Length: 571
Ligand SMILES: Cc1cc2nc3c(=O)[nH]c(=O)nc-3n(C[C@H](O)[C@H](O)[C@H](O)COP(=O)(O)OP(=O)(O)OC[C@H]3O[C@@H](n4cnc5c(N)ncnc54)[C@H](O)[C@@H]3O)c2cc1C
Image (cartoon, rainbow, N blue to C red; front, top):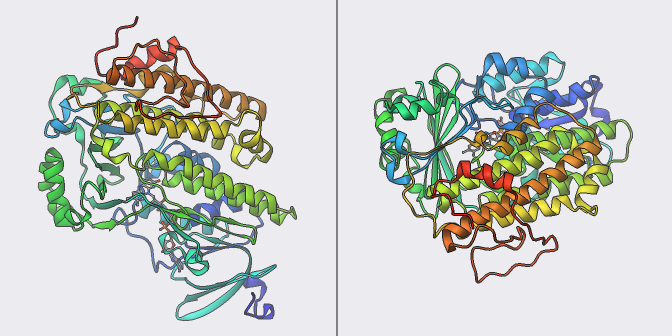
């Protein structure tokens, strides 16, 4: 319902798109829209009064493949990121819960070499200030100190009212995009919040000091695994049952540190202040605690967030509004998928806006995008839900992380990087066609998370002194290389996705053989149906995708590179 007469609006306050909130999601969308349609009129309303502070600003500093592709290639920020932000040396995990005071004894999973696909460690304050400048340079109207007060949705035009310098202004706009983050302006107004039962909390702070895990040990063997200086550029995860602690380097020799923990295992009350967080780290990660003891006068801020996961009953509306970034869905920061979901949400939104402005009827497309986006979230969440108890199981975590990476590169990244998600014909085929690829992918992913959970009771050995480079597994390297800025046509993309899906099925079956051999001493030659396999002998599963697989010797051989128990005897 329009409550302000259109005659009140001049051309100056008439926009094609008004973006509520100028954080990462809103500002990047403003760049994307303009790049695709230079004459589009975009308004970004951000309530922050002034430039953002460096380092001690928002959380969300580590980028991974999909989101990095969006920033570097889709938005063209490659040169900017290479010069103004830090390169990232992948994700790096330290396990072995019994050896938390000697880093060189911990099982370590992480790459030795920089990955084929680049990624970055991003200072969010620096980045958002620069994004404001970039967006203004291409003639978007980006207003700071502009607080959105009201949105009225109309049939042809929406109206947005904001307050700046004490004065309220109303603009007419064809599209409204909610990018207000956790303020979730539209979600609150239209009441479509959807709580998500994944009760994990976080606390974090930034340190004005370069924290470098490479300096924590003089052990020569440990140093020989990774070239000196490279560990520092990774997102470091120190892990044990129910939690992970992150260490992320930032430009200017600063460091971001965070605790992320499952409430059912680690009470939030034990780390919900800076003082308590430092004590919590000293208790749970003693080696890191000792390092932090020397740095207490260098701590720049402290922030926390309780129960961060949330869903949304609506994301893409046929009434020409969408919610992007954290104002819509949020999963979990493990694997840093925040920027990925921003990239996907923005790209689907931009697709709808561009087509609508050209006069295309986007009703069906909007519904389809909403379904696909939600399916991506629903397929992603089992990676985390009820999985935090496994965070201290060394072999399970190494296997799980390799699986989660493989699946992410093989399907999600490949699809996004080849513009597959906005290709309706292709997506319809993948969702509802005879191959039912997306359904198989979702089912297999869920099965694997079940396997990891069932395995928990058996992975109890004190595994130590092991270094695993995921790229020593050749198929992992190939999956990464396949997403390096190589765009392929529809047929080739479909063929590649199918091929990757088959590879994932063989990887799943072989991971099951290894787990089952170590838990139940089953033969390594058992045929395995990856859709119904179960370590829990009391559970029987049925699946339309059911298929029995024999060994794939190539996959079996490569997986030996991540196996830390004695190699099973082949019959
Ligand atoms: C513990 C934790 C760790 C994380 N780590 C990572 C990571 O390593 N990598 C990663 O990619 N992601 C990470 N994330 C996710 C990442 O932080 C978010 O995806 C990202 O910040 C969301 O950006 P956004 O633009 O949606 O929201 P925000 O950055 O919050 O921006 C929303 C903007 O809207 C403005 N606003 C709000 N209300 C109004 C209003 N009424 N009027 C005008 N403006 C308004 C706010 O001022 C704000 O600037 C992490 C998240 C958590 C919780």
